[in-house]
Image (cartoon, rainbow, N blue to C red):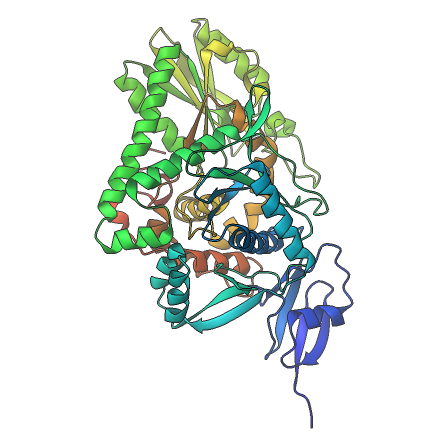
Length: 568
């Protein structure tokens, strides 16, 4: 009897393999001869990420992924989340674990067990996680009718997962089983726990007199699940001081509690009940309240230079424009200056390792000239402001002059605004620094957070498509270099901020779903970027659509979707 076979085109080494029909990705890897030090953990099959238990019944293209790829690292981290969830279920039956976004070099999460959590409790969880890893327990992916999964999660008190699945129109779904623990994750996991060697569960430290202490409230304790470094997966990523960002995240959680919306299931239920307009209005009001407090503080301090920085598509521009209006309401006269106008001439721009102009580095900005002009302005002198002519790559002067008085304030927005080198010659008492980031919106459920990088990527795809003539494919393709630049030049200085502004809106992903889906669908399956476009489409389908017409013209979201009352 002949065994039917399929052909695998292996992108890692540009070879073809013939394997029996029904072979798994792991079977293909073993036959491929590849030696991946940090993998494989998953693979792109026809440019769509799959777990290693994926079976072949047709010929496919395959690219194996390891821990040095962002997609592979996400698989590893999700698998760790499941192990932590099982450890909580085993050690603290009835306890509630909420997984959070990346923070401080790991993942911020909260644990609720009906009492204050001690260091010994955390050690017990870490120990149980290591027992689960050492046992190399199988992680089973189980497919079943969706109503069966909903009933199963509801019976176990996992209401956030039941609500999430209720909104889906699928007849069948899947869940993961680890021993007697069940869970749901929106993408694939490892096949077993044995590869999860590099992690640490610890209390989330904050600066305090006498050393470090865990972030803790009466309701729960903040934990840090440390994960491998992307550059060297044998080591844990270093702990980073991101305590101001933590304050913003915890404040956002309080806002969610006020609205009764902390997960996508709750958001969808609110929209279904006709509360979309209420959520939009309250979310916008909360942002306005935060910006108003910043304006009041700028007035109280007597600051003359407001520096606004943040990663790409965080909403810096609209933040500056809305802040300008609020400062005018305080009796100030704001003047907006763009850091781009202080670029060095293109011939003087440093080049990167590939010989391309590196416009992201701080040396691409004439910081000396900027500081000279700001010092002159703050001393009451008149200066002629430059304009950077991008077509010619040169700084030009067109007679645009500025002189400020006692009620004038300069607002400057740009990538390097919080870098000490950018304004080191300007007096500290004259400066007020703001860091803008889309920190969080709502979680999919208790164990599936919404990455800030995804929110900003979706915003950027929409903006680039609407205003810059770029396709989703082109924007996704540039994402790694943009992210690398942010990690080098922007996020390291976020703790320098006097105030941190969360530009994320609770309702925005429901609005973005309608706007972006047709753009993402234009990415061809033949393109490597299809993998990311497919992931984003799947992610957006969890959200119930919210009409864009409900979004106010002054909303920060209008910076990306259009229809703003501000000029850009």
